[in-house]
Length: 105
Image 1 (cartoon, one colour):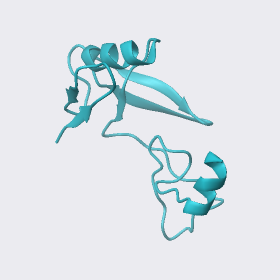
Image 2 (cartoon, helix red, strand yellow):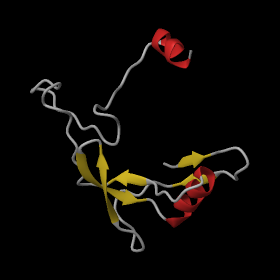
Image 3 (cartoon, rainbow, N blue to C red):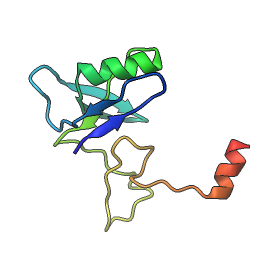
Image 4 (cartoon, rainbow, N blue to C red):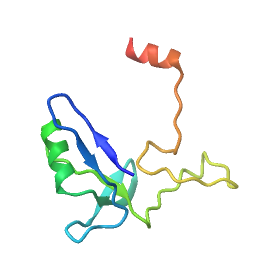
């Protein structure tokens, strides 16, 4: 699979996700909230595209084969542990249309 990035004033960019580091990339240590994990650098090309659009130096990271960020045991039933990836704290977050309308005023 691939991911196509599009933005106003930019040529589209297609990324083929990497799940293991390529010879020219490394695992990158990142902090997501209070969790420290490693991500697979998706390469200089997509970093340049995103950096140009956002106006600052950034990298796109993906989850590697050893990625481990379990959800909080405080809120997750013991019989159904889950992985949170790079999301807020859980693999699925929900919001209602009424809450979105209130948020967007």
